[in-house]
Amino acid sequence: MSATSGIREHMEVIGADGVHIGTVDKVENGRIKLTRKDSGEGSHRGHHHYISTALVAETEGNKVRLSANADVAVTFEEEGKSG
Image (cartoon, rainbow, N blue to C red; front, side):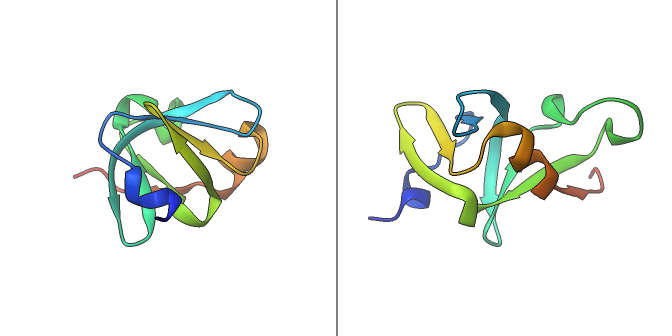
C-alpha cells in the first residue's frame, strides 16, 4: 500500500521535523491540495496551495508526514487560483 492511499480530507500535513504545513483539502492529480485557511498571508491569501505526493513519507493516524522538513517542503508548494 502506498503512503498516499491513506490520505484523507482534514488530515494534518507536517514536515519530517514535525512542523505543521497545512491541512488536506483533497488529493488531485498527484498533489495534496491544502485548505485555504492554510493559504498564507498577503498575495497568498485565498489561494489553495499544493504539495506533490512525491514528498509524502508516510501517513500515521491523522497526520501526513513529508520526507522534507517544513521549511524545505514549503519551497516546493505550488499555488492555485481560488475557485
